[in-house]
Image 1 (cartoon, rainbow, N blue to C red):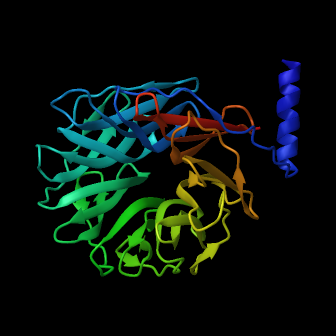
Image 2 (cartoon, rainbow, N blue to C red):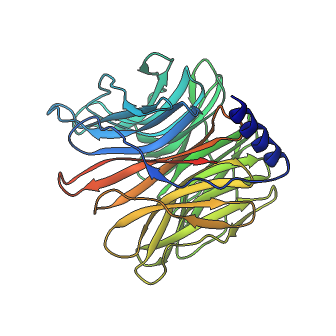
Length: 384
């Protein structure tokens, strides 16, 4: 007991004096799969360090079904798969967020019949089970990619819809009903939203890709309406996949930009409260056939942020993780499974019960060369 107290006291003093303990390093943790075919994890929500959800999809072995939502849950010790009833014949989850352990929301798309259109899908966890919620009907092909919560009666989910072209989509929950909210038309024929982050009811950002200007797409909600915000042109074209807001004037958006035909480099943009600008971000390797991509970002503060994705130098895709310490972004070594592709699509941050303890979880997929199927991948890191 005396040793534990001394450790906690010393650590608290060091943190007060500005000392930052180094992260232990990324390591692989066992992650379950729902079926024998393809299993993919795409998004996370951490209520706390012992209550984390990771969602995506798996390809069902049931011949009457195709993809179905994949739910993995971390209890502080291990990941476990949470089974649910089927949603349509084909459904995928791309985003998740929450207010508390018994108030979690997931967003994606569902196909009711073979050959039918995809419709927006929102599921809710009440602490006991996952259930589909009613959304306003639409004749358009729709996909929801992300969801963000401010309060239990103030939730945004974003994605895209297609009529004769692809357009950004935003749907809002006011505690009583879901309602589509008009977004300014960015022009062009193929623009979408991939992520959303909420600071307050009157300060919400949504990001994606603007095919008209060949750059990242950004919208801001001021409590009354959405407005499009100018983004810098980076490379031949660029797209935003993830965002983290430390404050209303400290927001990071991550993604990738095209540097040589079909190859990409990492892209990180920063909002200082007045305008967006590109900040320097490293790449695992460079060259005409090299790629490094970022898909997600999360943090503890404006000087402690993590971003994840994958890189390709030669052979196969490998996991990519990088950290921002308040001054610069640096690549941090991360492990891979097997000899096939490895990719990270989501990162979450949470604080442990011990003073100063921080946990980072990253999820995605790896390609199992034995079964020739994609399987779930989970990495973990902690500080100190």
